[in-house]
Amino acid sequence: MRGSRRTVALTGAGVSVPSGIPDFRTPESGLWANVDPMEVAHIDVFERDPARFWSYYRPRFHSLRDKRPNAAHEALVELERRRLLDGVITQNIDRLHRSAGSQNVVEVHGSIATSSCRSCEVKFTLEEVDALFDGDGVAICAACGGAVKPDVVLFGEILPEEAMRQAHELAAGAELMLCVGSSLVVHPVAGLPEVTLASGGKLAIVTKGATPYDGDAVLKLEGEVDEELAQLIATLGQP
Image (cartoon, rainbow, N blue to C red; front, side, top):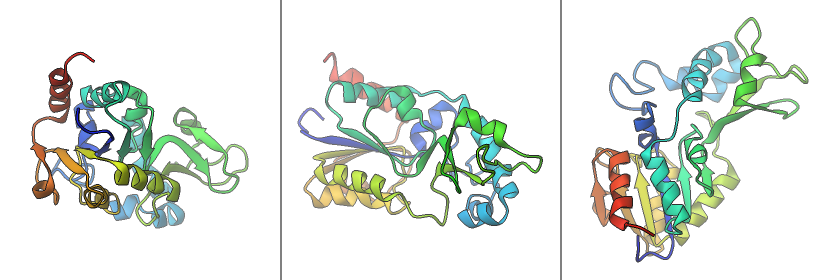
């Protein structure tokens, strides 16, 4: 990191596990362990049966509302403060990078921070959404009565063009990409490390379990992400 003139971080669900947020694929405890995501978190489900959609997403909103950043988020903030990190590309929707204080964050899957009316496009904060539910458990716009959807990318939706453009630009310009808490298998985001490699950059991976890029990485750490990144800060010493 000291030798890299441009470093970016790519984070996945694992970076938020120390904050008490389950990842997606861990057997029995992952978010998808006891539910088929295509049956509750697909755009077709939202449009066809919004009550079913919100029966899954509303409790998730409540569970995420009080979560706080952990030492991994804080380490990335510190690296940015020291001008050793140019930006964070995240697959997470939990808004914890921004809560921790990261400034340049690209949320490629959106964020639970806001929800929007599909008709009039009025936005509601996470705190405001709870007051929008009708008797059927569906969030209805207070302005026009339209359907309200979280500003997150659901299955069946295309990732935001501008967010992916920014992410690709960061990846292409990186001399080092620090991949944290991601299995690097969900595309198109999983293709970003290849963009860095193709541009002559290097990869460092901090995550549990294997990834498709382990053989390409100059470093692979499999400890707890909060402990590994805290140790990185300690190793770098005082700025």
